[in-house]
Length: 107
Image (cartoon, rainbow, N blue to C red; front, side):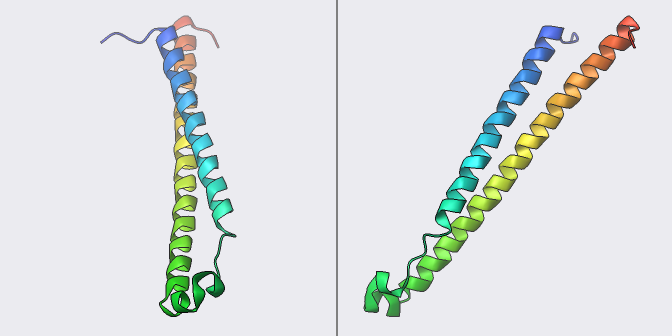
């Protein structure tokens, strides 16, 4: 297999950066959804006396807490993925530049 051309490396690095931006934006959206979900708590009177006595208030609070947790974890993981892709793009670009300088004795 032949070495990639400079154009192929450039396209691959740009694709990594584009993917990193996409995952970073998605992480931001999940964080915004988490932040919007935090104040959405319902109280006993929202479920009626019977609903509260049946446990709906606690069930709702548990579901809300779990959703907030999952949105936060998802945001954290996608931000890490974005950072990893950006790091990979930087490493590929640096490695390609170093190889070019070595091949052409440019320092």
